[in-house]
Length: 301
Image 1 (tube, rainbow, N blue to C red):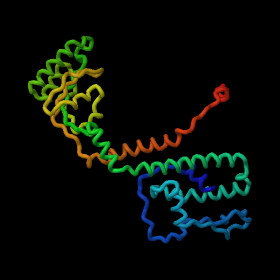
Image 2: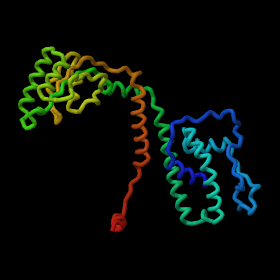
Image 3: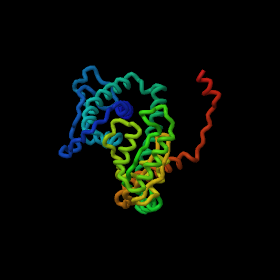
Image 4: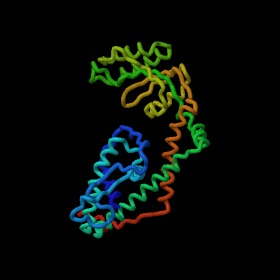
């Protein structure tokens, strides 16, 4: 009980580092790694002269505690825990001596903590089950969503809605410029040169070396209104696409569907999340909740 309460506080306030834990396998499991002098083991009250009392924590006990709450705890946090844990043990010992573990408040808090811990344990178990994604499911998802794994190398020309040198002017001249640029792109002109001409026409500063290339792009990497570009074949030019940011002309340089082995981990993560969500919903679905609004609304006043 004491260690559970301590860990809830410690873990909620800790900043997890990135240093991997050191290998302590050379130490036997029963090796004492923490000694608290003056704290008598067991539930008996500490006598006035308690210097002869010792509470010891072995490597096995310490690592069992870590495995229960944070299996991948880094080395720095383990060291902090080794310092803080004895402090909480001694404080909890004194609280028990004062009978604070017998109060209604303590019992209610422990009952609520139990609910939280049980819920977390269920979630951990569900996540472990969800992580076992069958290869057949991964392959089926890949076949059904092949377009999501299509990757293209594109070039894009951006035509602003207005000229910077004439901010009060309308958009008609830029719309005409977009049509002109599109025709030049279809004729095979270089996209870098076209983009530079557009910026010069629009008076855009700071873009003397534009780079229209967009490498290894997926559908989700484009705005929704631009996704139709992926329906083009390599070498084709898109129509002029318009949105709130301007006019756009695309060219598809190359396109391929990534093989399953390159996207297997990505699919596994997606399916794991989906499976976890479905399993949690399956647990919660049979239950409904009714809240007495008269009570809760009154509490707001």
